[in-house]
Amino acid sequence: MNQLAKYEQHAYALMRIVIGLLFAFHGVQKMFGVLTEYVPEMWSQAWFGGLIELSCGLLVALGLRTRWAAFLASGEMAVAYFQFHWKFQTGAEFLPTINKGELAVVYCFVFLFIACRGGVKWCLEKK
Image (cartoon, rainbow, N blue to C red; front, side):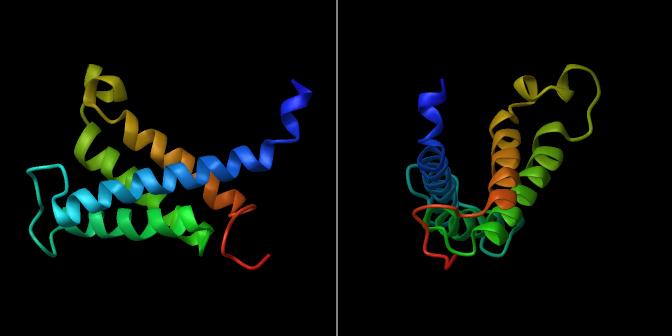
């Protein structure tokens, strides 16, 4: 498996770009109602969530203010999990597979990793 080690920075950059674009699309859905019937009321918590998803997703994908944007996105996903998925319930509802919070948990930890690592390769930030 050492043959793959030389592609580590490329794989990380691709992950950062794809995750950022996927996250931005969630924001596009919330902000503009693309491919969804639900559009949150302007200035609501869900609307601000969409604004964070769109802006931070694009910043992460572009590699611009990567650490800051990824940290904010990670925090938003932590709030989303606790407030909208887990809701501090006991029993089986604690599990992300049951409360449908898997994506929020995955985004939270991937963005936390990106916040710690930064843009690295193929980014607009100055090194």
